[in-house]
Image (cartoon, rainbow over all chains, first blue to last red; front, side):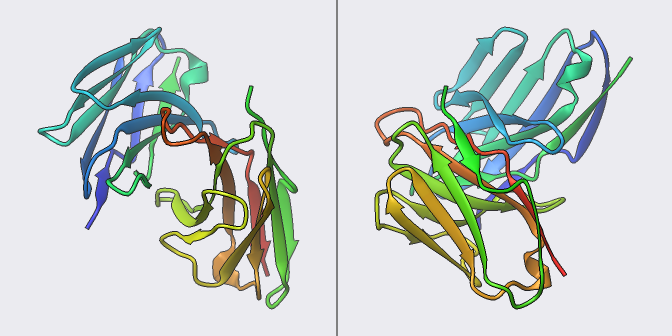
Length: 109
Length: 114
C-alpha cells in the first residue's frame, strides 16, 4: 500500500530552526510537495522536489532523497506566523497526490 | 493569482438531505479535485476531473457524485447526507501535466450533518 509518514506535532522556539521529516512508500514517484496550512484555511504550496538534493526558497528549504524515500522541510529564523500544519504529499505513478496527515508546528516565544 | 472559490465556508445539513458544494476557479485549469480532510488523516481524494464532463473516482467516492458542465466549475454532490460525511471539504485545481502540478486550493467548506 501507499504510505506517507510525518510527525503529528512539533514545538520550536521563535528565531530557531526546525526540520520536519517525511518518509514515503508509494507506487512510483513523480515528485514530492510541501504545503502549509494555517488553522481553518486552505493549504498553500511551499515547495516541489523531483530530483535529489536541497531546494532553498528564502527561510524555507526542502530536501529529497529518492533512494531513501525521505524528505524534510527546514524552516529557519522561525516566526510566530509559521505556526501551522505542514503537509507532505507525493505524486505517484498515476500522477495522483498521496497526502500525509500533516505535522502541526507550534512556535513558542 | 489563481483564485479558487467555494460556495460556502460553513454548512449544516440534516441526515438524508441532498447537498451541493460548488467550486469555481478562474485560471482556466483543466484539472479539478474534491478532497475531504479529517483530523489525524491526510487529505483524501473523493473525485477528480481532467476536463469538462469527465470525472474519475478517487479513493473514497462512495456516497458522493460530481458534475463538471463547465471548465471553471466542479460540483460535489452528497446524494443523501449522513453523519459520517461531516468533514472539511476542499476543492483544488491544477494546470496541465506538462507543468509542475501544484494544486491551488479553495478556502474549504466545513460541513456538519446532524
